[in-house]
Image 1: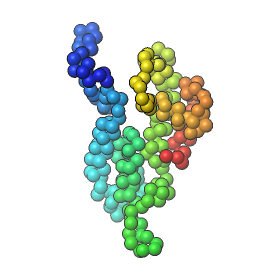
Image 2 (image 1 turned 135 degrees about the horizontal axis):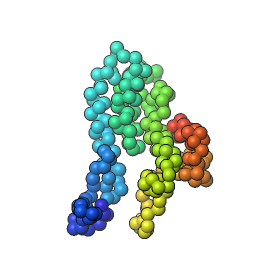
Image 3 (image 1 turned 90 degrees about the vertical axis):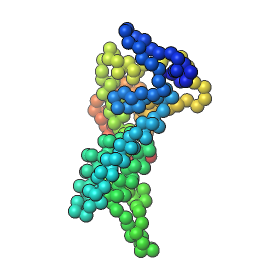
Image 4 (image 1 turned 120 degrees about the vertical axis):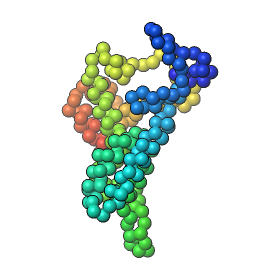
Length: 215
């Protein structure tokens, strides 16, 4: 892949006896990777799959025969894993929860209205989708940190690519998200690899990130 669109149309990559064309994007292990390091298409794809799953479950989510707790379990078990990626999924989650929890009668006007976000948070006892994403990302860091230095995943996690980043405002990297989440729990001054070696403390941090009441 190359950010140079002209180069991407001309050159290819050859290794051993195989040749790979340069492309603007490709799918790997179900994830769409782009030459601009953008997750926009991946989010669209996740939301499209989530919407298809949600629409197939609409009758169950609005059924009066099922309890509210059972509907939430259906959401977390069937729908949530499909769409668990990116901040935009927070909007998707709220839409599903409004279907499950139903409207509320306004005390002043007496009219039925949709629930506000704060009301959804009060009624939904589980961590919201953004917290789940952040905690799983930290849990993955801890898993990779315990691998040996000879493992490729570990080298990718701690390695630093050569060269300079493009001019302009730098795009947020995966490791930047981890640093921000560590800062949220008061550990921004410590190295993530060394901190992850203490398994019990790292599990506590993952749990803390899951339950923080911040956006």
